[in-house]
Length: 222
Image (cartoon, rainbow, N blue to C red; front, side):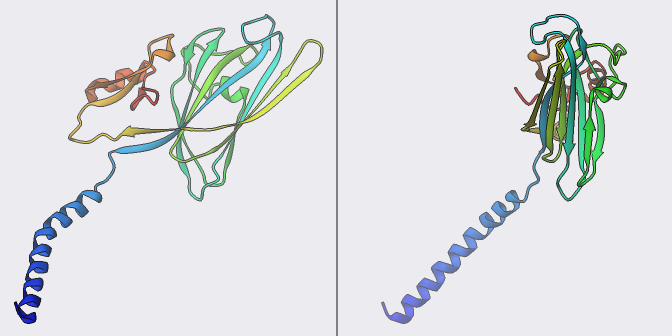
């Protein structure tokens, strides 16, 4: 075969290969540009103890307790957040979810007065002068700097102070769309938050679950 014929054959093979690979390449590129079906959230779980305890319990001794939580958004843009509290002692109770925007560069202080004084709506009103233990769950669309400061003053006058930073758990929740008419609900059995699990319900039934204390979206620990 002459060099001219060989060169022509090579050009023909390369041309045919590009024609065949073209649609596959275009299809692959189109697939990679598809939007994610999930939103990313960062969840912070923060135990708190507030008030004057006069009895010896499983995790406390008599004394005056306080918790102060500082939430800082160090990013260059504001972020969505949602929070709720779950009481564990001396009574069970779960608040409605509170939503707010955390501005860029802003810090928010959540102390015992905030936790118990009406910022979170619970089934039973709380007495800010009484003793309570519980968990604050904070979800954010961006990573936040969360620092918890706890203090305990004993009957003998001694004071114990503790400060720690809370690391988030990253979770993903499916967005709603026309192809998935069911809504993901994190169902929390009353009085047994450790048995939470994900269920999928019609949009018309989702509101009733949310009113009973369930969360919208898949449970992060399923």
